[in-house]
Amino acid sequence: MNSITLDLSSIIQLSDEQYYQLATTHRELRMERTPAGKIVIMPPTGGETGKRNFSLLGQLWLWVQQNPKLGVGFDSSTEFNLPNGGDRSPDASWIKLERWNALSEDERQRFPPICPDFVIELRSETDNLKKLQAKMQEYLGSGIRLGWLIDPKTKKVEIYRPSQEVEVLNPTTLSGEDVLPGFVLDLKPIWGE
Image 1 (cartoon, rainbow, N blue to C red):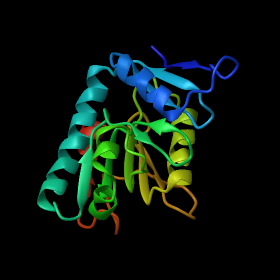
Image 2 (cartoon, rainbow, N blue to C red):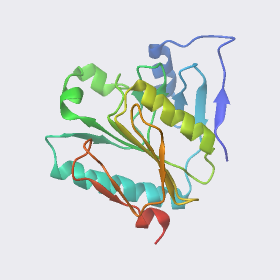
Image 3 (cartoon, rainbow, N blue to C red):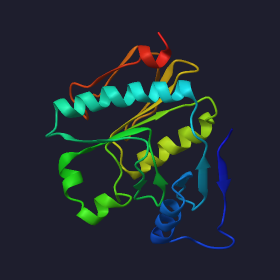
Image 4 (cartoon, rainbow, N blue to C red):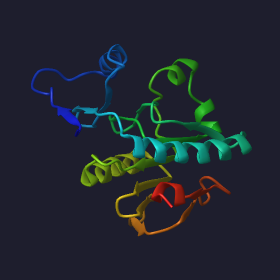
């Protein structure tokens, strides 16, 4: 099953508050909003993607627990209200502690109005690669410092960094570089090895 995109722009331009109300009223739908205001409804993932995502989150969780003064991590259920106008839910993400603490309690409870410092998008069996690449560009335009688009089909990773060309690798591990110092993601469970 593929995602469904609704373009309501000829009828209404949803404010951030209206979109928040729509998304929280219909929690059973996994939805995001593009900067152009289109609503994207995503299907649930299959078992293999869920297993891969579990490994990603587990590895990131362990690093965050070992480095609690650096920042906070988030799962795929967290939606961020990005500076470019989109509302997106990366598969995994992380925000530097000072930036997270600068948000008000209300902002942390809702869709945080901040772009994560780090995001991971894991391509599922039904994901369109071009749409995921466009989503990664949205993160770049909103301020991520490091982003990984992981494609288990090709065993390739696209690495997104500000002011740099996208780097495409076929690695077995990935380094969190200076954004997540000491974090190394083992891709063998993602590749099914």
